[in-house]
Image 1: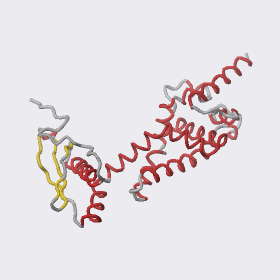
Image 2: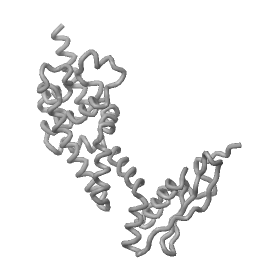
Image 3: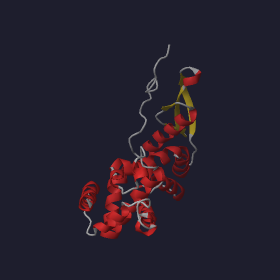
Length: 252
C-alpha cells in the first residue's frame, strides 16, 4: 500500500512537470512547492517559504515585462498594472487556467471542498514559480511566467490604459499639440434605463473618430482611446461610429 502511495505521488510529480512544460533536475523542489501546510508535518516542510520567495520572483518578472512592453507609461500606471497581475485573484485564476490545482497535496478536508480556496490556489502558483527559479534559475522562471501569464499582463495593461485614457490623452495633446482635448456628445439613443452615448474627442481643429458607451464617462474613455491610437499611428480600438451602437437592440 505504501508503495502504491509512493507510485501515485511520483506519477503526480511526473504529470505536473508535463503540464508545466518544465523538467526538474531536483524533483524534491516541486514536491515541496505542491505540499500544503495542512498535510505537512511542520510548516517548514510545506510550500509556505516557497510562496514567500515566489511572490518576489513573480513581482520582479512582471515588472520587467511591463517596463519593456509599455515604455510610454509612468510609474503610477505601471504600479497599478503590476498589482492587477500579481493579485491573489489573478494568481488563483492562473492556477486554475493552467490546471495546477489538480496536483496539490492537501488534507482530506480541503480536497473535499468544491474548489480550492483563492489564497491556497494563488500560493500554489507562487510556490511553483519559486521551485522553478531554485531549480533552473531566473531565466527558467521568466520563461514560465511569460508563457502562462502573458495574457494577464496584457489584460492588466489594457484595463489601466482604458481607466486612464482621458488623462493619458490630455498629457499627450498638451505635450505635442499644446491643446486640451474636448469631448462632444454627438448622439444618445435608447430608453432612460438603457441609454447609449456617442462621443468624439476634439483637439484644436482635429476631430477624432467617435465611440459609443453605455454612459457618458465610458463613451469619453473610448473616444480618448480612439484619439490616442490615431496620434500614435495605430488602429483605433472602437471603430463603430455608425448611427447605432454596436450592441444596440431596438426595444419596443
